Length: 328
Image 1: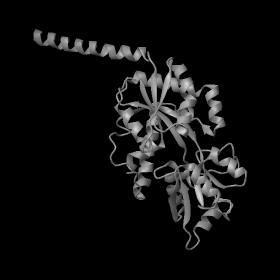
Image 2 (image 1 turned 90 degrees about the vertical axis):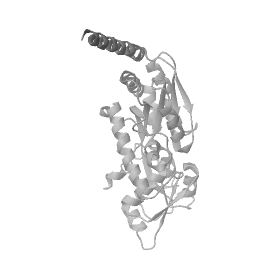
Image 3 (image 1 turned 60 degrees about the horizontal axis):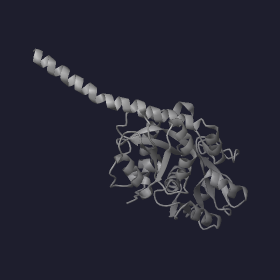
Image 4 (image 1 turned 120 degrees about the horizontal axis):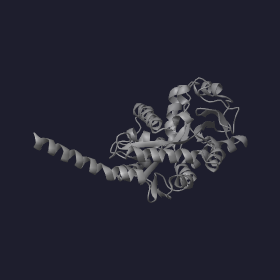
């Protein structure tokens, strides 16, 4: 009996000692620069947001943030790389709706967004707007739906590429409004918008901050905001929810994640640093100038980010499956 008790104490003591370095490491974190993997090349929206928060996040952590751009496969290559990284808090990932959609869009992924990551927190949201070519006869959403449902009408919707946010939103818009539509892919939002202004296609879902200048110049018609609230640059333009289409109150969001198994004290440290970053006046001013919003205070937790990711995976998975969309 004494031998068993002694052996138990030896094992318990060994386990406790093994845990000490892990706890001490979490308490000391961070002691060197942190790499933030960005899943798209420089110049895009996600890269821009990485740069906006980079300095303030590093200041809050007390260590530099190194942004590493890893593009390809709609952001999935970067996510796979981040999922395989050490779960010590020194590699984090910034990602967006493409991560949720990718779970269904691609059949050969080597990771699972929910199982292989822990969420750190939500970064920002940005509204989009449904815009049309300047020669479209309808002047509001009700008229647009009536026009689109005329016998024989097939609406031409441009988007930034198969699997892109504007593509998936376009599919969901047609589905929710009951429109017959052909989705026209382009190599990015820019070329799609050029053709829209030229009248080559009928509609597009476009970032509100990018579309408002064209709307104000009379080069595009705006029909509704796709977002939780109205866009400050077009305060008289109602949201889809206000017009009776609550499923289209969609925000384009970003969040921070870390590899699964990252100790909770480190996740909490990163979350606290993210909160401090989003409270920074310079960061808030830059977001506001670019048509981006912060999430409400109650959604600052890792758990809120995890819930949003879960909901988004289901929403876009349903859209992708029901419309037989594939990124392979």
